Length: 155
Image (cartoon, rainbow, N blue to C red):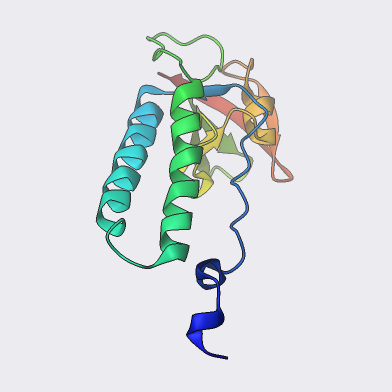
């Protein structure tokens, strides 16, 4: 069939599904809010650069991501950084754990968008984040089927 008989929208492909916004409150650390701001700024720059082009799927992806991150920025609830001494695990706290074999691992309780478990950043809404919240140094906790003791709390 000739291109003369196709709709412009045929080039766009299937519409992208919207990114799912968490039902939880959007608590953020100061670093997490900065990351959201950087993401919005980067997407706005991408959008400006892509507007002159003809890549409709790229424009659709950028616009979808920009809608998501703009909404996350608008709903962000900044939680101030705690000051030492920390008595109880709360949002923003770094928790050091010592496992039965002597291995130690630290986790920081952060917002959902800032979470990166491989780097030790755990969402407050994740099972580990919920388990640790409210605990104190000396408490024992079950982590990935292993028992660990909370040995330190830092802001």
